[in-house]
Amino acid sequence: MAYTEVTRTGYGTRLKNSLGGILIGILMFIGGTILLWWNEGRAVKTSDMLKEGQKNFVEMENPAVKSPDFEGQLVHAVALATTTDSLSDGTFNVGAVAVKLHRNVEYYQWVEHEKTEKKDKIGGAQETTHTYTYSKNWSSAPIDSRSFHDPDYQDLNFVYREIEDATSKAENVTFGAYRLNAGQVSSFHNEQPLNVEMDADLVKQLDQAARDNARSFLSRGGLIDQIPDSAAVIHTQGNVVYIGRNPNVPEVGDVRITFTKDMPSKVSIIAKIVGDTFTYYKAKNGYKLDLLYMGENTAEEMFDSEHATNKMILWILRILGILIIIGGLRSIVSIVPTLLKVLPFLGNIVETGLGLVCGIVGLVWSLIVIAIAWIRYRPILGICLLVIAAALIFLLVRRSRKKKAAKSGIPDPQVPPTPQAPEIQIPQYQQPTQPQQPEQPQMTPEQQKEFEQWKQFQEFKKMQEQMKNNNGQ
Image (cartoon, rainbow, N blue to C red; front, side):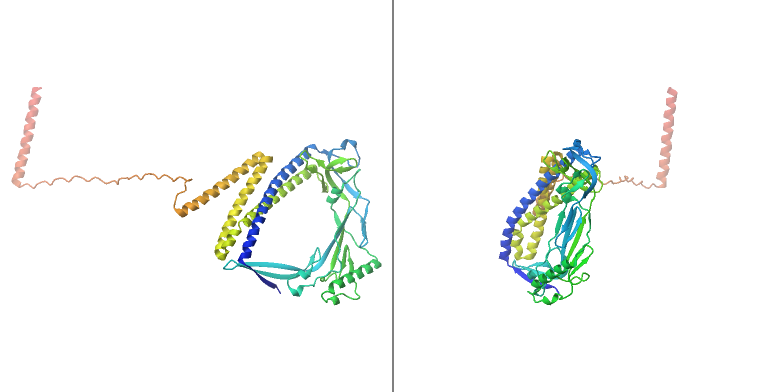
């Protein structure tokens, strides 16, 4: 069953918290800015160091033979890393000849899970509902159940024995005719299970100590009857020492200790030779280079991998820095929506709008910081980033002005109105009308006869005139 608690935060307390958030926001903004600046410089310097190492390293073909020619040189070599050192764990009497020996401890415990839901109330108060649920899981450390919120789960956790994780390292790990340094040994990993074999006396001693420790825990909650009187609580299974009633059925309080060992293996290194061992190569910018990769790797593969890792770290820290800056800005302006939370819907609208503005401003500021850092280290890319940031600022300002102009009905002074082409009146084509012929008057038969005689007379006169003209010629 889930356990629920409801808390109420008054309007005054929320305002006070928001005022405190302003200081936190300023620190976050400054911290995120510093992180972005430092990260860009770190990435560039790391890249320059790797490029310098690529130009200056020499190939060591036979690390089994020590040669004075390689003294003080940055070398790439591949050989078997091995040791004759014997490592042991005194508590459980476990040991082996290995490069490293690991003891990993887990505890089976009740774990508290919390889920919160916040609801704004009219008047500015806030109601928070806390829902707590519980489950049994393996944990890397004992969990104090006395701080649990549900009284039914308080004082239920205990452990048979508290044991710390531990790692032992060999002091003498050879690499052909040379020895690996401590940093290279720490980078070595070739884990394999380490079987546990304990004698009967040690098992009995550990068993009694586990019972006594558990009783001191359980006596507080009246659960002393959970400790078995006769059955053993120490069990060994391969490379695991299990403290509890039944390794196949975990119970609260059980402890699981796993042992592993790093066995000899071939490794590839890029480091500087000093005497019979290795040290870091210091580049001109002060950055250091000392690499150990498991297995056979060429120098090109190792440098390519380091360049890829450097880029991945660069982007992870970039994103982290941007989020910190945006979070800081939101914390700085959080007082504004809090003041308006007397009407929750109004406060939520303002909070959403400010969140969007903070996101844009934080991104623009981050680009400016990154650009300035790149101008310091990489001028061309830095200038390109500044142009992008300037474009974002221009678009943001222009959009804001358009919104204001739309609300007021005044055109944006930065955007001249588009000239309108004059309207051209095209006359409509009309088909011309034919002139009407005057109506001919109607003639009587006598008039028609006289008109015919007149026409004949006129034709006769034309013929006479034509004959006269012909005679004259």
